[in-house]
Length: 110
Image (cartoon, rainbow, N blue to C red; front, side, top):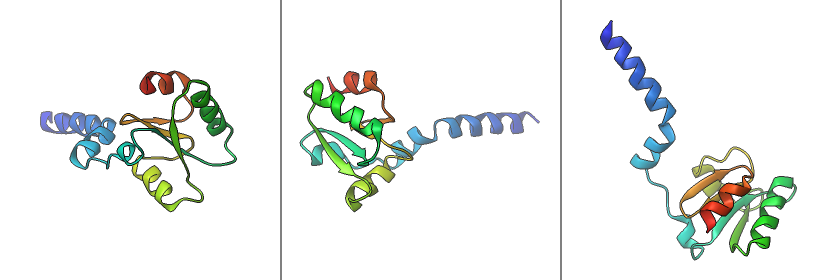
């Protein structure tokens, strides 16, 4: 009975940290270095929050490279490898930000 309990606890912890475990075992390519260390924005042309992210970075002089995930196969592949399920997704100094989070964008970009 104790072995089952310990197994369940380990399984729950592993499930909760599956992303970090996966990144450790299978590290992602360093997409930031492919674009001179700039912030990478994975977006669509119609997304309002993507537009807000663009404006925030422009207003704060944060250089970024943008992939339109609907038209760029390379951008779509990178987006999917980062666990993208919605837009915007940003890659800032190795940190993945899913959704529009002004405080995180500023914090990681500075």
